[in-house]
Length: 504
Ligand code: MV4
Image (cartoon, rainbow, N blue to C red; front, top):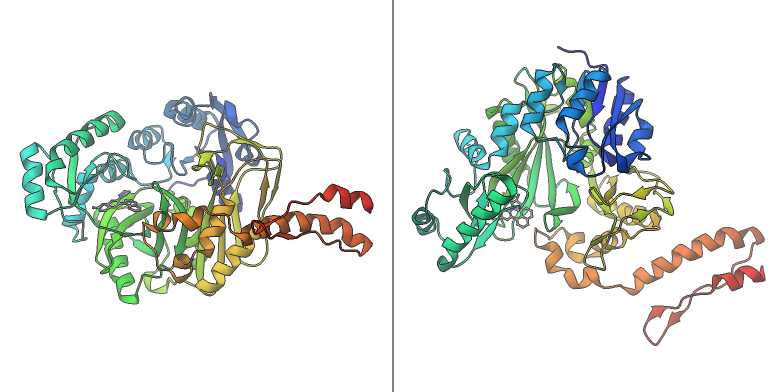
């Protein structure tokens, strides 16, 4: 047992603030680290102490393991929380913490290593009786071996980098004639990206759902799962919307997958918060895909339906405490949805849109949570992830949660930069989302309607301006007609508000 009194948060942005909020509730002091580009960032303001660690590029600051350890020692932090991204799944960093007597809030370096190697992870899962996608259990040694593999498991297949994950270094092979060139391409891409050219082959699962289970483990061998998250709404391996429970799930399937998620974590003596990713096909067959050994971006929806603070649990078990959770007593209450707000232009090929936040008004009210960090006048740096906020809603039913999300998106205003707010609203209005009839092809399948600017949407934009204007006119108890549909193109006419303003 090690008492944790002070935590260094080796991260930035919304997740750094999220972690520090729990630290504050637990009476734990916080240490921030920041790069040149983050001098005015919210996590620096929020922390009890903050230390400069280097220039703007991540590799010179947030990825500088030695520098971060040095700050932890200097500030007498007992533990380091790595958040997600950056050093969160870096086994060498976890080892370095241990060697310096600092608690790494996460699993052991050995477990990070094992799960980071997708071939090793597959082997461990097979040994634990967890279903994996049919395919090879060793790295492909020769081109002949690749051909033999497709002869035994059939086409199509996916070639994947053992050191990869999250979609990097993947190749789909549909025709036998392409296998050799695909293996070569995957190998060289893997070598270039990860310094390791080991690849393996899996049977291709078409139109799968991405469903993941949250697990928690402690040093005393206790492991529970906190149910699933449906994460199929992604674009280029970038998640946009997550929800729990999954519409696809039955009680029986949840029980089976949950049991396998716990078996997976137990097989590697997992300590901390982790995620078991599954692919689920249309016949509800499910396969272990990979394990993420970190706190995930989408963790708040799990917190909302289970009532458990995942960061608090991470800190407790990292200090050697018992989990104190009993599987049979855990329940999913109601429905939670998360929308990720990116600083990007959804209507212009999702181009990043860094810049200064002119105005931000976040939604409030029943069942709404926002995990963000930007404020009025803040300039979003170009060097990091473009995600600026997460909007999480909860309601008793899925239908009500969707309505609440629409309401919250309506209230959310960000000016000065482009954001994905409009795009998210279109997702909330897409019939396949509303009915829950979607898989990982959702964005591609609904591309046309997701990109179109509907009349309703233009109306809503107009309403934004009108409601702002009402603040003024209401004082004189006078409402001026402010909108008119242009019959020529069915679009709302732009108004000269200034003129009306002058008349008052
Ligand atoms: C697959 C697959 C189909 N069959 N593996 C993409 C991210 C990486 N973690 C694994 N991925 C996939 N692996 C087999 N054998 C389809 C995907 C995939 C995907 C998975 C989850 C969520 C979105 C996805 C989008 C495209 C492809």
